[in-house]
Length: 69
Image 1 (cartoon, rainbow, N blue to C red):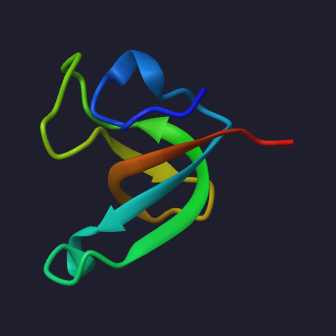
Image 2 (cartoon, helix red, strand yellow):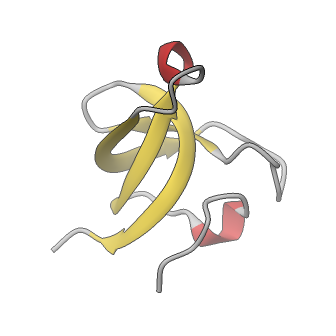
């Protein structure tokens, strides 16, 4: 069940995701991690739902890889 990361309902804590960090928005470099917190309150965001990963990095979800095994 992979999603685009633009709908808040698709993203939940504990999911493995690829995010783009603020500093990487120009290059599009992706960072992989596990969602800790959802920071976007709206149901949809065109650039991706903003999340905090378990390691503390913050970025917008570009791809949902599924639940952590």
